Image (cartoon, rainbow, N blue to C red; front, top):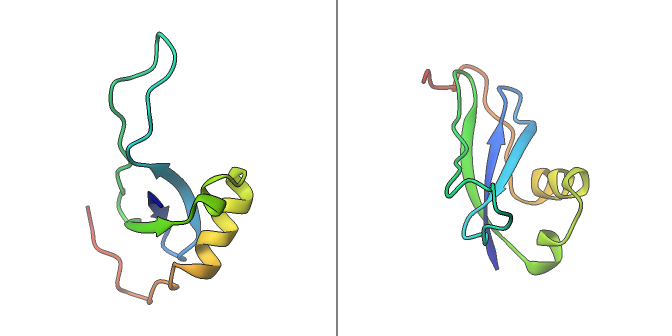
Length: 80
């Protein structure tokens, strides 16, 4: 199982994902990276299976949205 950080826009659409605990590769790779929600966005963490973890980004976003993410309620977005 992997933990996936999911960035959602105001409409609850997946706009980005990042895995935690991913090994760094490449000589110029950053030591750390993080996902930060901006105004009107929200960040959620979900546990995903190895099968989902192996998907291409577009398929992963679709699977995460349909299985894990609930649509945002109107007027509930917090300001950053």
